[in-house]
Image 1 (cartoon, one colour):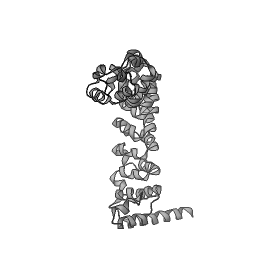
Image 2 (cartoon, one colour):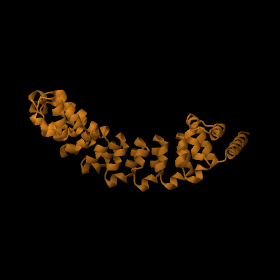
Image 3 (tube, rainbow, N blue to C red):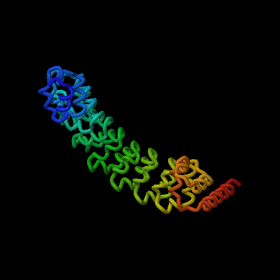
Image 4 (cartoon, rainbow, N blue to C red):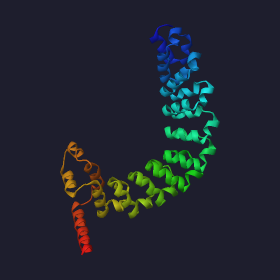
Length: 296
């Protein structure tokens, strides 16, 4: 009962074994915190002096937020304690009283620490347009847990996409992923969000051009017709600062180790693997000629 290693092994196997440990161990703050970090259930069996000690509980929450479920009921309503718990464990919010999960100001603080925790906000909040708009502005990914009506709301979708790009766009319903303004909001934050746009928009010249201005690698998610179009390939190359000569060198390189050293060419080249580089040169010359004529 007084051997730390034996007690530690026993508590790891069964948290209630802590009850039978020697007083010196049961009152050892460091030992208890280490045990709680490993298994939140240990908090249920610690001495009353620790269960009623707010500073001890705060430290326990930082180590293992799931321990909130085993804290005294009064402390489960302590805002600071809850926020620390949520920071280390999304599911900690499930132990919070319903009245707090219906508190918009508090739940916005929770959302700032954990997008997943938003799913346990009250149903009324998840269907409240003003609250959801504020929440998606903090982290667009929370749109996944909003009510169906809010997920389909154009303003909510736009704000979520503007905040979190593709991470939010992929969670929106089909009609919003086909909405030009929503998709553009996502592309401004992350051009690779093009992956989650509708098929029609991934084949839209204006949308794809908009994405390529942000990141040439977005060409990967354009429709096949545009991925093999020399004018779009050149737009992507211009944004990435890649020349035809560098692509030609890449194709001539045999060793993978040498290819990997040629970033960003290494990432871009596979996207246009079947494209004839001579056609790119011809397109460049044609563009120069048109520009020259336009300047006369």
